[in-house]
Amino acid sequence: MNTKTLLEPMGSWAWWRSWFLIFLGCSIMGTGFVLFINPYNFVPGGVYGMGIVLHNIFPSIQVGTFGYMFDIPLMLTAMMVFGGGFGTRTVLAALYTPGFMNILTRLIYPTPEAVESLDPALMLGGRLDLSDDLLLTCIMGAVAVGVGQGIVVRQQATTGGTDIVGMLLQKFAGIKFSTGIFLADGFVVLSGLLVIGFGLGTGDAASNGWMLTLYSLLTIYISSRVVAYLLDGASYDKLLFIISDHHEEIKRFIINDMERGATYLKGKGMFTDKSRDVIFLVISRKEVHLVQNRIREIDPRAFVVVTDAYETFGEGFKQFPDKNQIQAE
Image (cartoon, rainbow, N blue to C red; front, side):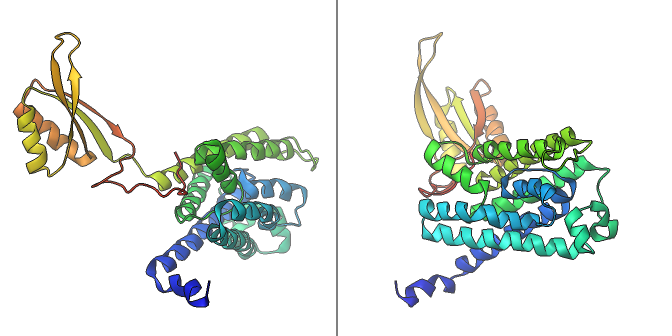
């Protein structure tokens, strides 16, 4: 590959946008950890969760530094499995995030001793001390981490850590990406319970160790749901099955007024033993009431079933995902 071919993507807006979003996502995630996770000893899995656990044992080493220690072998694995292009994004994102966390930590704490203690009362002069609102802190941290991870993974990169474990489980075991992360993070949470809750390795068990573990599990769940939402989106489509004796009028309404297509399915009434045409129609959520009202005008005795179409691929809807595209569900 010559230099021109290598640098050619840099001239496109999509290339710059992708890298901007990767670093933005890493920054959001790192901020969530530094402000809402690390000071309160939540252990939301991942290499940074394990970093929090180990920081309690070795307080002179920052959480982000532990991230570097764990990420290197996982990044090498990602490069081998997902290819060089994916590996480049993973390497840069994983190298940027721990460094960003370390720098931000030093900026918001006044002294090296405060950096070691990670006391929220010392963070920003105590102006962001949420020790009395741990549930709110847990939710805010989970959302920030989930949004950051989701933005990065949408660019076909990863922040490292159990993100890679989740992708490997999806690729080789057929497990959902978000579920894979949840399972892998369980081990880290248990480690946090032993070290922070029971004082293993520190000799100083936290009085609310069990509660911190529950908050940690809640953090993992919320962040995984946010990641899934950002990757796959919400269900905005509806699937309708329509049975009517006036299906020709409904057909004209769908084709001419809505400018949509539909499909006839062959059905047979169980009680009457009569063959019927069933209209199979996918529409957006906002069109449901329009269709319902029009069907009621055409045939008040029509039978209509409305259900969620979680994902719809094809003309007029979403494009089919690439072979190696990450799917949360």
